[in-house]
Image (tube, rainbow, N blue to C red; front, top):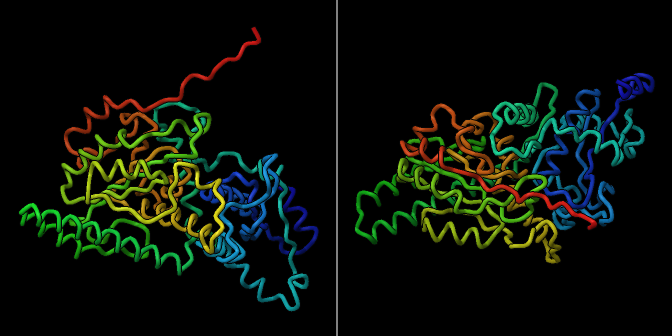
Length: 396
């Protein structure tokens, strides 16, 4: 590789500075691009660090060069709001700096926008470019597996991990929101005179015990969570397909509750209307975190208050981590839910349905036990929404 030849000729350590390519990128798409850059750095023998500051490159025009998740009140690097540095070996390099890092024995390189686009080869993708409604198990597994390997530290200290402060806060929030849900269900059952059911909800609340490691509750026999990621904005038919509304999730959700009667439903959505619809159908069974929500894409909303922009990103990352902890996940095409897959590892690949695709092509061993006898019939009848045919314009 040409980069390796240059490094050898200079006789100095080389470090890749990973930046944001363009202003219109979402937070989890930015993570995807970090993974792609990390792949390149690893193949080229480069160390790496992520520098997601206030400015972006001009990967798209004519947009300004402002990173929409940067909040000066939260710190100078958006990546470190939530994650540890991706390369622990750089700590040793930083320690070698005396008066500024110009004395360290290393070259720091930043790719320009053209080269960053070249790295965007879809080897780790959030969308199947075929636009088929058939779920390609092999394609999705191969793309997710490449990310799995980057979401853990290798022997050289290279990989993506949550910062310790964020990991602890997210785990505490996950415990609290589940207990709140079970207490609400217990109160509702008590009010209806359903003593046995109220007692089962009380036992489930006491059994909620998430670990720092992303995954289901330690006692999954009592505590079950079905997660729904229902995207309301930031969907283009030409890229990720149409918006999948909540009603497309209901039949599977009903089956899950019938099979798992004490289950909670966690919903992650930026749409207030979608949240209201799911709560209206499932009542106190629905749990969710406080987050920035709008029927407009929050990415393109500028917030002026202290830490408001940070809050926009914080709520999204918390939701994505919660989704990764669910016993089963229903979602549509989105970089958010793909991040949840990368974070959860291979377990979630067999415990999720993408509602953008037909269900028949997604069925795996064990799914019938999760959803009951009605799953086979539902899988046959479910037809995902599709985009309208593209208009062909004529000069006539």
